[in-house]
Length: 123
Image 1 (cartoon, rainbow, N blue to C red):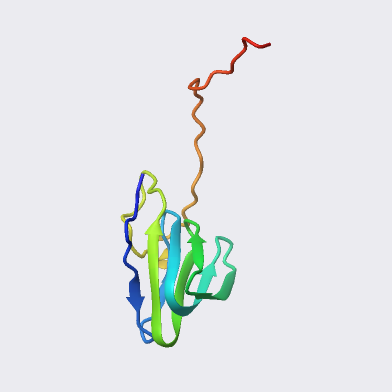
Image 2 (tube, rainbow, N blue to C red):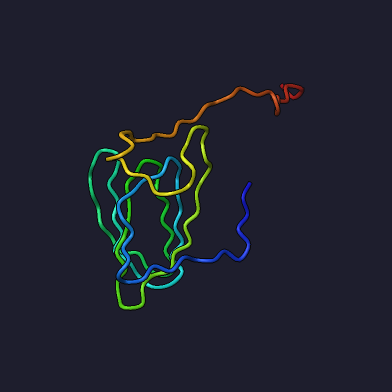
C-alpha cells in the first residue's frame, strides 16, 4: 500500500508541453494549480482533447497515450502517481508505442479463496 503524505506537485512551464507517451500501469493526475489542454489516445487510436484545471483528477488507464500543453502564462502544477505496478512492467517513466511496439492491457487474475467461508449454521 502506498500513502502520499504532503505530496509535492511537478511544475510544467507554458513552454514545456508533455509529449505523447504511455505507461504499463494506470496513472492518476491531481491538478493542483493552473490549467492545461490534455489529450489522450485510447487503445483503439481515438484522440480526445479536454481542459484540466486546479482541483481536477484524471485517471489514465494503462496503455492510453496521453500528454498536455499548459494553458496561460504561469504553467500548470500536477501531482501524477502510478497505480499498482504489474509484474513485467517498465519502471515508472515515459514510454512510446512507436519505439516499444505494443499496447499494454491489464487483466485481473481471480484466485479462489476460502478466507471468508459462508456461514451455513443458519441454513
